[in-house]
Image (cartoon, rainbow, N blue to C red; front, side, top):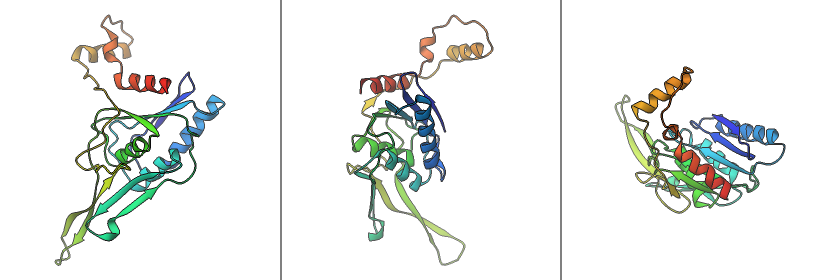
Length: 220
């Protein structure tokens, strides 16, 4: 996880995965940026691209940091106990400051729960490409031989709008593809890193998704 305070008093926060420490890490990074700014942040860009997910509780708690009300996610399954709804508690660490979330095809599971919760509660704009679509709860059922188990899908995750994450993913509000780097541009990066001069067009190296997200944050 890393963060950076931008010149316009907006914050950039990249979450690489969700684990048991992520909730406290997110709160710590935001507090640090607010202290560096000397006042509340004007907005926050959360980068969840290529985040494969992680623990369910971490996703719930992190989404709750930015939501004061509303459903975060619900689960529906073949057993009654699998049907649950997780609701945000009062309090917003950003006090309503705008949020933009970046996702791509590599964003999955817990990352999709957070993106879906912020999107469907109209707390954030989502930018990028459709996420992976991994939203199932699987349980291991021991078999009689004591050595084997059956993996069974017992429930699926649904966004606050009632959309199944499994096989569907999160659709961005603003869809924008990230162009692949050509071999020539990769060589430019290598040359720049080595301190050599390069005459290639550097605009192709820019992160177009990030640029669009920053523009949206400015327009909020």
